[in-house]
Every structure is written in structure tokens, then in C-alpha cells.
Length: 168
Image 1: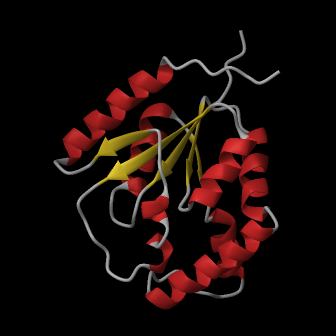
Image 2: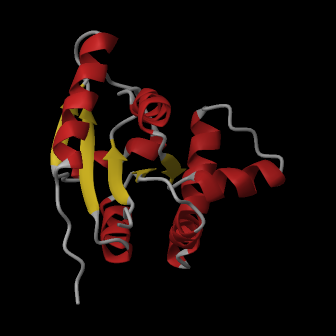
């Protein structure tokens, strides 16, 4: 029996725990990890643009990603990485409703998850449309790291039992 790869799309503002969730899932579930911004970060680095998390670098990366999105370059990069992987789970971070729509069109085995944490990062250009994204599930990260890991584990139990039907 062939196991098909299942996809979790993660969303949330800066500082809510997306990177921590990715690390936890990678260690405990051996996932393929993709970030919508991967290709933009790769191109930025090749141009010598520092990823120093300042407003200027975030704005430059966001504008580059908008350009890449216009030509489906970020999506193509994610699809290509997935085609080369034999892992059971594919975790993809994204920021905008448009990116979510593109991912839903590309994959039929997906669930979207918003990570919720009461934290505010002022003036983060990359977060401007995160609030407009509606996800299937929410994972709370307003307590201890242990509770956050527990919430992720409980979600993964639920996710493991989901059945996805391929369109004919």
C-alpha cells in the first residue's frame, strides 16, 4: 500500500511560533518543510540582501515574493520539492489568502492551520494580510511550550485520521 503525502498549511503572524512548530514537526514526524518565502529568500541572498529582519529587509522580501507570485515561481518551487520527497507529511508556511488559494489548487490533501498567540509585532510588513486568512483549524500557543507541543500533537492525531479524496 502506497502512503500518500498529506499537507498542512501553517499561517500566523511573526512571533506566534511557526518556526517552533516546524522544528517540532520535523523532529517528531519527519516532515518535508517548505516556506512560501523560501525561493524569495534564496534569490535575495544571491543578490546580497541581508535577512536581518528589519522593516527594510522584510519589505524588500515581501515585494520580491509579490513578483514571484505573479509568475507562480514560489508555488512551482514548492511543488518541485514535494515531487522529489517521499516523506509522509508536507508542512508549508504561507502568509496571504492568495497564497492559500494557490496551494489549495495545487494540492488536494491539505488542511490549513493558523497558529494563535497573543503577541504583537509592530510594523511588520510581512504580516499585513495574515489577519485576512481563514484557516480550517487553530492551534493555540498562549501558554507554555509544553502545552503548545501538546496542542500540536493532538492536532496531528486528528490529522492522521483524516481521509482525503482525490478528484477524479
